Length: 590
Image (cartoon, rainbow, N blue to C red; front, side):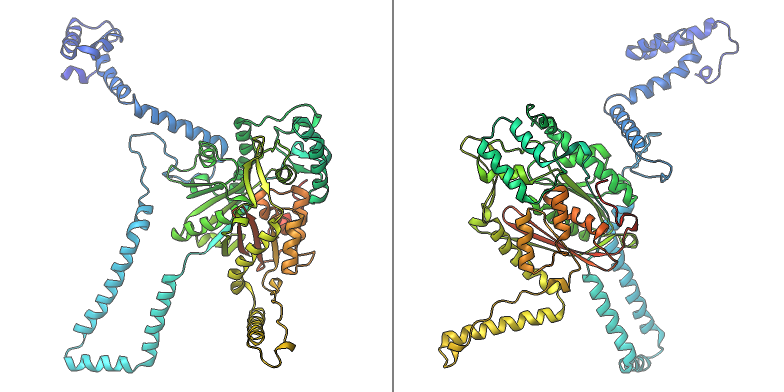
């Protein structure tokens, strides 16, 4: 055995003693290991001692562990190819390098802050109280002295007021929830080849060879009155139909490609603008109403950008055009429940598989209104992120109208010939008005100034008194008319409005109900003309228009209103903290 620890004395052929020692070891080990050793010629004692550790390591790294090592290498190469590693943080547990078998897979700081931080607070409070009690019990020499000290403290009003103030402040801070901030936002700007004029859109519909002449004329009239412009976008699988002959490809593979083409550039842009790595995302929320593949869109994003394995993802479907408000509200609840976390919110809609190919007029509206689009937001509940955030989320309100008429006014179904599409009812404007009224009842007390709230209260009292006088039959009741309801001026509490660009009729209906000016609805009208109805992401196209052309200033409050199937009305109020001067006056479409 001692001869194995030293090299041979010369480079010549091995001695008979060395060959005899190697033969003994080979007979001793036998089996598979002996056959492996025979491959290494000549089987000298020195080579046996050097080859054996390599064989052990090679066998150790086979099977599942070897597969994991290769997978980590592939993920590291993909991440390095897409990101800048010059500012890489050392000892990052999410960038594991298999230099050894010591896998740093547990974030102990996260474990301590999530599970044991509250116990640490309690221990510190107990230590402070115990220290004060010990000083009071053993610091004074006699009981009489302790009693006099306690009486003097009770008579000291400054001390009592300080104690009460500390208790109240502690209770208030304990009930406060973490604030939620929007670090960055971006929208998908379609490439030039995706943009389709209205006349080309009618040609594309003719190429499908499924619409009657009456349906084509109906879609032409709707397009002329829809408020959409000449550069709205359709998915790339529809573009070949501009020749009037080629049918669109609407399989699931094409739908996935559309989703990738819209979502991936937005995520790269918003993460770059926010200056954070994909590994810093704690929550991923994606909403897409009409396209819910398996694996989900969240899984597609996680795979592309190598998000952490413990990221919590939520894929929302069927929520309609108000889904972004739902996603933001969900992100707010998650971030407030876990202060210091970050969330990536993505809203989009997929048109590849949602072209209606029948002749039902109620379903043909979707072919003339909806367009490609999407938005991405990075939200955070970190206090340090507030120093560089663009917006602070003040309020979110959601209203769900539970009526048969409201439930069926936006309804996905099949027509008599089996063609699937989304049916839009003629009562959608009235239904949206009722849903908005219920939402604004919640919103009003938080954004309206005291004067407007007082006017509403006085108006309600006057209506009640006039109604009571008419019913009781008082002598002068016939001369008393019941006053109409007072609509408060929300423009006194809100500086900018982002009304869902669902169509010209929807925008004009909200404008009439809220008594808004043309300037206040300009973001919605311009977004509808430039991008069409991009579903849930339309309110962030409007926000982008306000940032560029709406004279946005620090401290302004922006109200986003969206309507969706079901029927829902969701709203969010944002406070502008930072204005990006580099985009002021620069149009989205170059």
